[in-house]
Length: 109
Image (tube, rainbow, N blue to C red):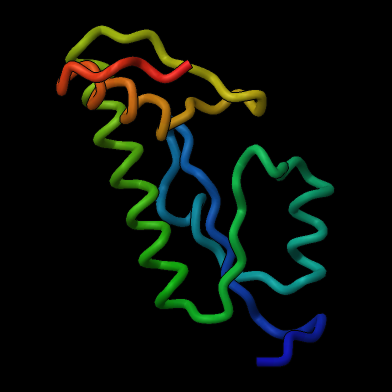
């Protein structure tokens, strides 16, 4: 598919504590994506661009699910929230640490 400045793309980012589906999955154009970066979006948010809405929605649902599972594990174990350089909790680290300790594996360094 050829992408020009007016072609719609869907962007998915990592969720934060209060993120909604619309916060992590949105339609824009290449120029709109540039403006998102000018407005504060960073690579720490792990943005991914999709050319199809269905793929973007599936990725967003998966990211939100992982975030919610990790948050629940963190609450159940009274684990303090870890932050990435961008200020968001690192969901994958939370899940990895929680699952590793559940299975008796070494903690990541």
